[in-house]
Length: 335
Image 1 (cartoon, rainbow, N blue to C red):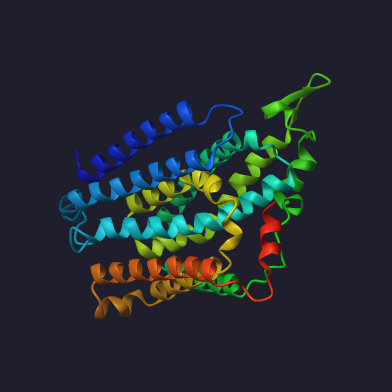
Image 2: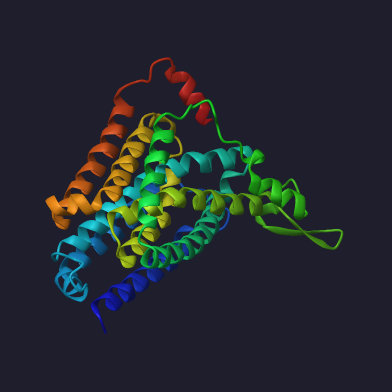
């Protein structure tokens, strides 16, 4: 068995055990998740990701040997994983704000949050695996696509940095919801926790079903930014898959942990935007950059930029009140 196969096997086993534990103990129907439980779950998923990083670190030498020269040393892939995971994890916080809007817009009861999030996130993982597989295959065949991704990331970062906060996303105006409303029989209630109910002997779909589909669809939209960004950090499919899945699985606990504070991160979007522009520029100039800076050093620089921009934007958001936005007004928007 190759080391790459062993890593995939370990990842699959860890994921299966963690999900079984999550489903069996932490995802009981109609159960409200407390801040303490959300914190423990967040520690669980972040801890698993860091443990996987340590595992990659110990296996790094063998992984480098199997890479046919594409990996310079034993620390490159582990650091690429950590950089990619941090990138995805920070983008997850942006996801959470949209998730909150969706739950509030459809007036989902808090007791249904956990199960709806779990199903939506599992659907999102399936879509991401498909998206990553297609993306990796296309890039392997048409390497020039990386330049298009680079331009796209720079454009996305610029628009994100200059976005008008008044332009708030309305789930009821989304194309996905309008499509479901047009082609599916929908009912305006949660079916007491059910996704499908029978009306006059025929199946009809509840708002919980609508929310699950919207969560998966919105995450796929975010993946259009995040997956190219991860490809700018690492070309190894194993790193792209594992970093994405670890980050997405931690979304649910992060949602419960941050839903009351996510609107405090006024400048997080700008921090993420700077990172996206940095990775986009790096992708466009990779050929010339590699002539002056070796790959391991590039990974260290990327990791440093991600850490500085994301942590800096969060701390700046916490300690500096945005001009013209009264504290009470921001607090009221959460309720």
